[in-house]
Length: 500
Image 1 (cartoon, rainbow, N blue to C red):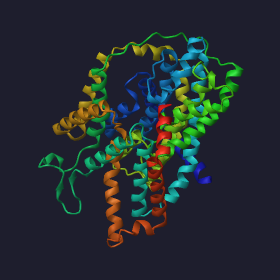
Image 2: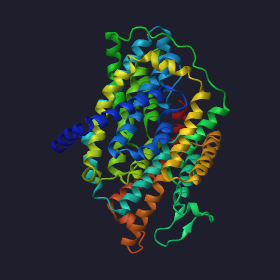
Image 3: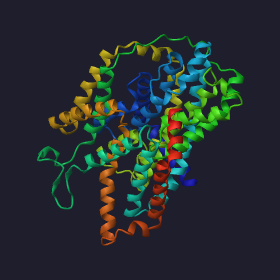
Image 4: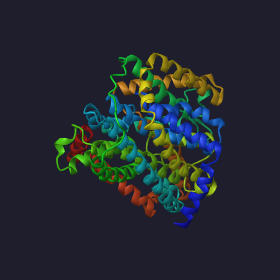
């Protein structure tokens, strides 16, 4: 406890420096901006900015990228409530009751409760990160290569189980990501593998071209091929002051949403969108009158908005303490750290205390900034929807190309980005969720490294994964997850949950 309090105090001194305050503000502002705009979102924005963070100091870069992620959860609620147009995936469920409240002339209280819930959840989840992450890091220090390999297997299986859509398609994306991660030169034998004679692939496929191609260029192609959406009609929000009844009705939903989001943010394959849907389902099940939901129930706004923000911040716990990304955005964060030569894991608190505690403390500061950025500037954010997409996306493509080329000055990386852009569009058109692909791509090389270390230390004995207690426990949990998803009854329930 005292170590955590001391770390928080140190982090506040780091986060409160003028440069890091500027990065935090820039991330919160940009996160709100991309949360408002449909079709952009934090995934594309962080992928776009990865090359440009190479020139920044690591702590400032991660503070800014983190602000974009949790800031987008705030911004997405504005257009969901006033226009019935979610700017961010995690805000889709907010449209149901938020827009119904706006049509009843209660858009202002809906916006206020969404912002209050996000702030409370953000504060709670940041506290969880500050006090729980050091404990988990202390446990993770005892992990050996076999334990890490089993942990990553569990993470990939968890991503498959929690992925929306077909189980087989999610598994296929994991395998495809693992294969892409194996491209390059084998560090033990020095032999090239899966390069097909292309010398430019000898060092492997770059993380930035894959991320920008699949989630950036692929999304742009999808939107340009589809019909361009207009901004819709904005409903005036009126007074932002919620009534005492609104605050009383939403307080329990905010508390439950914060807990649900904090828990789901830790799970592999979880994240803000899953937390928001889970919170809405819980609130509807617990309501005395479930028929109110869909017709302007304020709990249907407070719970999901609290859950998505809490999940966005607790996602950093497995990232920083285990080096395990729980979702695609966290995989991008690992890419940002690796660009700076930093490997996330249990020793990051000792090796990079300024980075760890600075990022944690900046979350409190960023949440306070987001309250100021969202409520008073509602009109400004809504006006952004009038910017035509035909002006927005050429700029994104141009900046993407500049960023990709700037990382390694390689024209081949531009070709790779275009190829993965087409692949991303094809995958989405065929209803393959691309996020598991990125998780497999990031974890693949680390899994191979720990597998080989474990086999070398055990002199080639594969039973080492069963003889180590932690590894055995993780593999048993992995087997239970696989059994649960394969059983027909559980599979039907899973499909019904995602349908709801």
